[in-house]
Amino acid sequence: MAGVDIKDFSTPKEVRRPQATTVEVVDIGDGEVGRYTFQPGWRWSECIKPVVGTDSCQVEHVGYVVSGALRIQHDDGSTGDITPGAVYRVAPGHDAWVLGDEPTVVVEFQGAAVFAKG
Image (cartoon, rainbow, N blue to C red; front, side, top):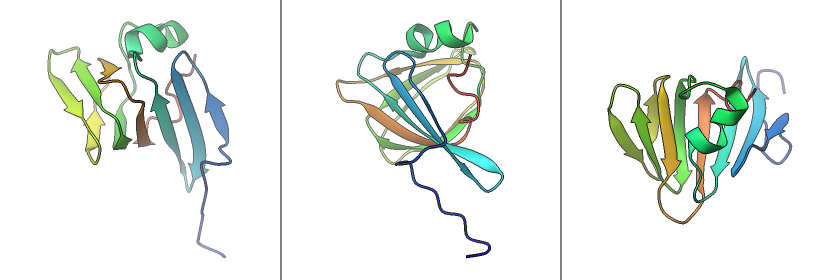
């Protein structure tokens, strides 16, 4: 159908698997959408920093939490917890980690093109 573009995470364009992380990316329209799964114990500064080599995450994230929870700590000292149902925007310059003992799953509409890429 012309004008309709439907994708499914069962056949992602790309999958990245840094430590305790799965990033699945699909192309849609002019952009990319990512589904990220972070395992219990995941922390950006321990699992992703070695891949990207920056002191903090320099990706801007806009997304939605499907399950689990993350704590975000920005370089400016502000913090916030994102939990199921939350829609969020996180500016570049932050660390993040899984809260609790269940995986955290988020869908991101901004940031998927470069997150966890070396």
